View (cartoon, rainbow, N blue to C red):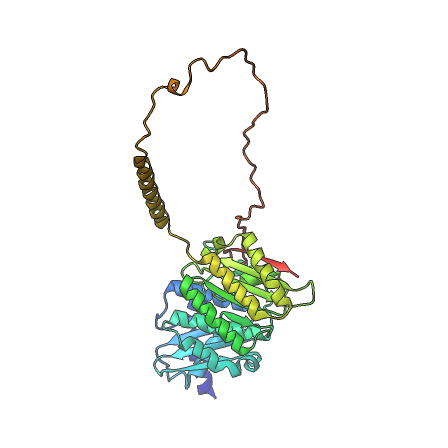
Length: 405
């Protein structure tokens, strides 16, 4: 018994420097082999803290190069000790990637076992599928967040979380990779075959126009407005193409007549591809098909209208070339017509057209017939070219619009 107590004390002493380092740098991610940069550690800590603040779950991840067999029999024992060393939390999960043994272990608190035990392989596979440790841990966090989202809504809004964990030097959200598909049908309005078909169509659109499009259905907005929900779903689930996360996300909340809500959020370069009136027109064109339950027709309209808005127009240089060619052709035609009129000669004096004595003025006066006033038109605030923007809870700029019907 004494040997066991001594072993525990030694283990805690060995973990003490790590615990102090973790509290100073990262409370949720530990890297004993320096496989992550300080910047990556900081970003991952913010993301993990966001999950804990929103859902009340401590989600940790560790990387070790080898296991001290004098202190631990298994990686699981190590994971348990690490989890307990950084604080007393009721709900939590920690994964340790033991590179030396080419194995991993998952430790869960009693409160987390019922939720995560059946998802262990899925969570690990999300991490293991990525090429870098950083991307893998982000994928792990997203997989855990997906399980938590399916179980219960977040306890705080993303806005509250951002305010709680963002430092004074930056308000930029932590960028995450998308792990959800381009069609997320939580309201179960589409068949599996229809979902797959539109995922393929959305992927084709994304590849051709370098802007991601997505469709999401929900059964509840969890106390948010439809705009807030659409923006947050886009931002916190990693939607968007390229460095600026360009794209569109269409959100639909089914309901009784007058309670249905349809909203599209735009981000990045997509914001200025559609004016407010264009968005409203597109949604109205989809409305009747949605009411009748013809969701595939509505989504076809969604794709068709976005295609019209984002496809490139005629390049300026070609407009210049066409104009130049037109001028040259017109000049040649006019010169040809002029050259054919051999009997026409230039006159230098108007008197050749007047018969002598035929014009006699007997009197003259001025008659006022009207007036002309030059005015500058006022700017119409409802101009169809206007695009309004707003800031989401993550601090990013979005455009968009919606209808309720």
